[in-house]
Length: 484
Image 1: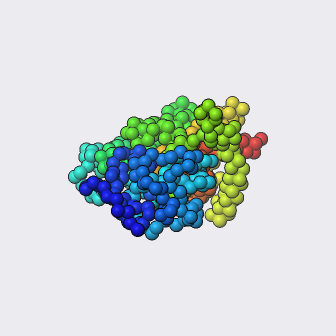
Image 2 (image 1 turned 90 degrees about the vertical axis):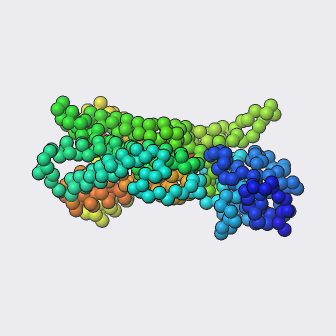
Image 3 (image 1 turned 45 degrees about the vertical axis):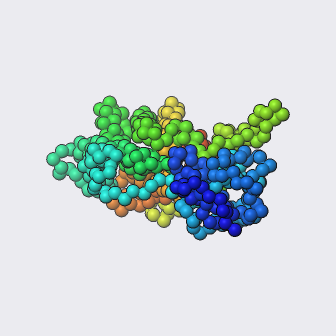
């Protein structure tokens, strides 16, 4: 039977938990900003007997997960593995008090968090605006957007043409200016335009009221980062050549890695953090990743119990499992299985694509002395993982994970990370370059999936950086041992 209670005229509607009919909703979704998404969620339909005697209303704060004395109880269909959500909610955003069922622990937690579970598909946290790509009407930053159209799009297209052409054997020696200067000029133009597009998109999303992630798209920022690194690498390589430092040595590798690390951190700080899209705390310890019915990360993990003096305490096992120690231990436990899978896949792909070891670029730098070996270890096993994890996990995975499902986020983040490594191809033969590009991308997919998964599973950049660093360190160590 439908609930006869009514709200004052003019208020919105929500989903009535008892009958499936509409019920008053005093506040529309998102009216209170991002924090309103935590409690204003639907819960699975319950029978009339399971409902409390007096409905406290949708504004009730979620009860602590260990308080089972009062309040609604879940339907018999729980846990979510057995319960199936309705095919379509009667209204887009349904609001009602909810609580995790007793004994059910959502994915990624050792105990149920004190927030309402999300039972609607993610991705509906921002309005959809249908603006023409070439139109400036309704733009929050029309000048920046115009700059991106004039410089960013043509610059990125020209840069990709030059990069692909150079790896396909196309010669640009007939150009009126040296090829290096041409690439430098195009890189600068593309970087300026794409950074302008990133800032314009961040401002536009804030103006449109995006509640999940009001920042620039990772692919757009990735293009700007590619142009920036290309533009900075050419002067560095020219300076090293003038100083008599050969490429591939430990010194040149360290300088290139420091350049990449500076670019990664600088882009994330000024384009993402400074615009208010994310904070460094969000990047290092994300709490809003992939909301779904079995994965809720918006609330901090709570202590296990309260002692006689009312102090919140945790067991030593929980301190290890929920802290940085647990992040490191899980990463190290995954290292050898992941390395075995990668080596096996690498061998199979080498045979299938007809590649030899000399055809595949290697991250291991040529070393002679122990000092050079330590420099290489520092660069490849610490600095490279740190920069890449900040950008690809802390930023890109974080941005997608706030509006996509967990599986979609892992797939997209892994493909993004693996595809970027195609630029490591150095051959000038078109056929060989294509096969090497396929190899570089495919062989990194298991690593990329593992890094993205552990970042989302542990909600910690420490976990993914530890796995990434230990994986690279193992490659460097084996390369050094093989050189003796």
